[in-house]
Length: 91
Image (cartoon, rainbow, N blue to C red; front, side):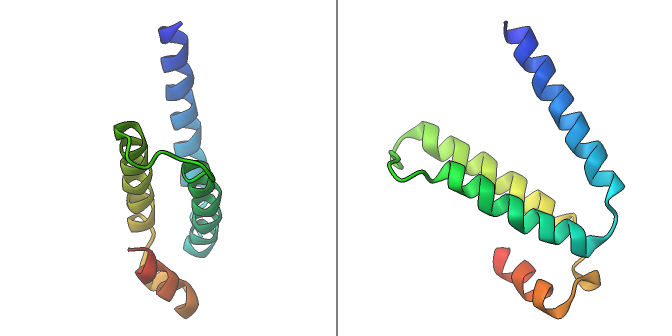
């Protein structure tokens, strides 16, 4: 069972990374990144959440570290002025 879960996770990561490589327009990547942030953060912060638990902080750390890596992978100089401000705010 654990082996199947691991294989599923690895395949998902590979598919995600391949799709990220295809989309080379930084403006499109950044817009998509902002949309993903909103969707994923609502999963992290449901209405009732025990924010003192170590499980919560572990999940939050993973979420924000992954998001920061994805933001830093985008070339800020190629973004519009508005997107550059959003970029700076996110970091």
